[in-house]
Structures are given as C-alpha cells and as structure tokens.
Image (cartoon, rainbow over all chains, first blue to last red; front, side, top):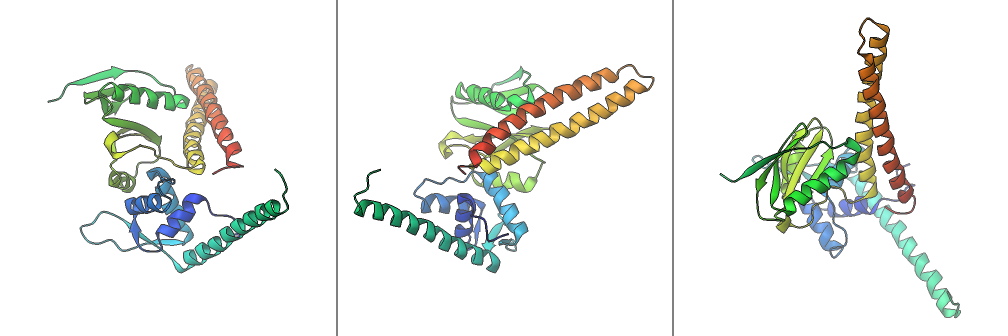
Length: 111
Length: 168
C-alpha cells in the first residue's frame, strides 16, 4: 500500500529535506529555499507530518544533544527507498506531460 | 507596566474563525492578546499590527509548543483544548496549516470533541429524565446544540474534502 499512492507535496519536500539530518525550523527554511519561496510549510502541518512519518518508519528522530531542545530527524533506509520511487514517478508525470504537449505542437494541433 | 484591557465576549465553537478574525482585528488596532479565560480575553497595548493571532484545537503537547517557538510563535494560553498563539508580524505570515489534509485533520479533532461531549450530555440527559431529577432537559438541550455544532463543522470538512479530490 505504501508504494501505490503519490506523496503529497508537503510529504515529498519534508522527506527531501531530511536526506540530511534537520530539525523542524531547518526543514521549513530548506523547503522554502528549494521551492524559491513557493512552498511554505506551516508548523502545525509539519509537526503532524513528522509524527506520522516517524510512526510509518520513513524518518526517525535522532538522539538529542544534551542541552538542546530541538528534535532532529533523518530519513530511514525505507524512507529513502520511497523517496527515490516517488522521484521516478514524478519523472514519469513530467515526461508524459512533455511528450503530449510536444507531439501536439509538432502536429500543429490547436488547443 | 503596559496598559491592559479585559474584554468579555462569547463565540460559538463553529465560528472559531470569526473569533480569530476578531482577535486579529484587535491586534491590528494595537491590542494584542496576552491571556485567555472562559469567555474573556486580556489584551496588552502594543504597536498596531505588531502581532498576528492564531488559534487551534489539539491535545496539549509541550513538545509542539517548543516546536512552534522555533519559528517565532508565542503561546498565549488555552481554554480546555483550544490553544491561542501569537507571532510578531515582522517574522512573516502566520499560518498553522499549509495543506488541505492538515486542515481536515484539525476539523476532525474539533468534530470528535463535540461528538463526545454531546454524547455525554445526551446520556446524562436521558438518565436524568428517567430518574427523579427534573433537570435532564438541560443536558438534552446541550446535546442538541453540540450536535448542531458538529453538523456545521462536518459541513466545512465536506467542502475541504471536495477540494481535496482535485488539489492538495
């Protein structure tokens, strides 16, 4: 079941940001930067996503540094596998989109 | 000591966005929420528009409040599970949710709470109506109101779910 659904945009970007360990606010900043300011994760959404991704075992919480109160997370092997499959799926979407549009343009089809 | 003001006001639970809009209007006028109580709000004098206000229903979780603090969100207080927050406007826009799924999940939490309080009132009301007490109707009235509220929340959830079929 894990592999048959598309990830939401938030989930995708959160997992991408966790390719390297990051804490909550760091994830928000990274995602905003990667998407040139288009995707702004709100804290309630992010917190909920981190909780469910941890439960699913796609990411894990790293041991906390003494003195630090910020929780850090990182992608698990299972999470990485799912992320790579998702990137492949997204490639297919873009490839098909490009193909259909390119063919239409070549044929002089009007839309 | 900065000037404060206490205001008594009643909002209905399914109109929580009106409550939030009112709190933001107050903040825009330079009265920022600093404490909450049952049907009363305490404001402190600030610069107009210095803060934005948000509220949400969720079980109390210190880890979450700490998480919010990282992005500059200040916790003002809560009434039962309704939490009130503010964020300095200079730190940017203040949203708690950024996708449809988490908005649906929030309405779900509100709906569940209304359902269980409504059920409890219904059971107490029915039990009291059968027994010697004559006050059972009060609970049944409460239950009716709560079920109405639940219906309103459900309606908002359905709208979002329709959106969700096409968008995130």
